[in-house]
Length: 256
Image (tube, rainbow, N blue to C red; front, side, top):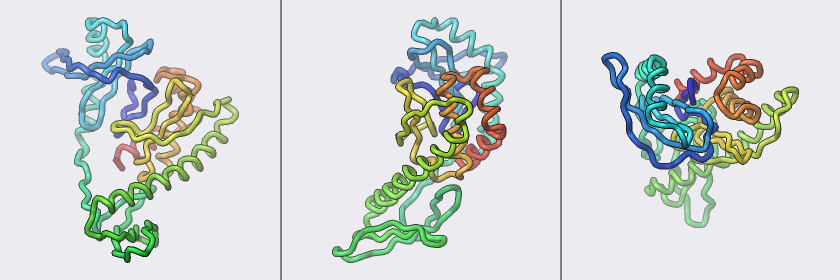
């Protein structure tokens, strides 16, 4: 990404090289460290993540000197992004998967209630009122409780994402957006991705966030079917189809 970093940044990169190298450039009295990867692409892309790490994805034939020059040209924006993310407390929630914990679904908070059942009964996870009720045969096995809850999240993500995907696609019909395949895919640092094979990938964790944030990620990726890179044409289309995308992006970052 060039200027669209999210908690789990959206990306159209499909096959980046896995290995990365650490590099540093000087900018005034500051130094900017960045992780460098190469992929089969035509333009260089810079992403700043909420942990303030900087990642650069460059074309396979790009020289280190050219990469350094381009990162230096974007140094002011990189520093601005790092300061922006530095305002938020970046602590990862640590769950024990016991009764009383708060977990989110579609942006709302629910209390966990773990209930011990007999071996002959069926294990279930249900949303009831302000509670996520988990009926399990092994209440003390928090690992199993986590597994049950994650399965519930994934099932609901599949249903909700398909529902919102169809609605977003319908709303974009007049822009001749082709229908890509939708798939759930676990990603460490991205909410969504559009691959070179024509698939929209969505992170199941996104289902914990508000519907308007889910729609933003879906529309963002659908725009990539027309414009693969984060260039002027891409943002022109995104601004046209979702004028308040920046507000939604900010909400997603805050919820994250």
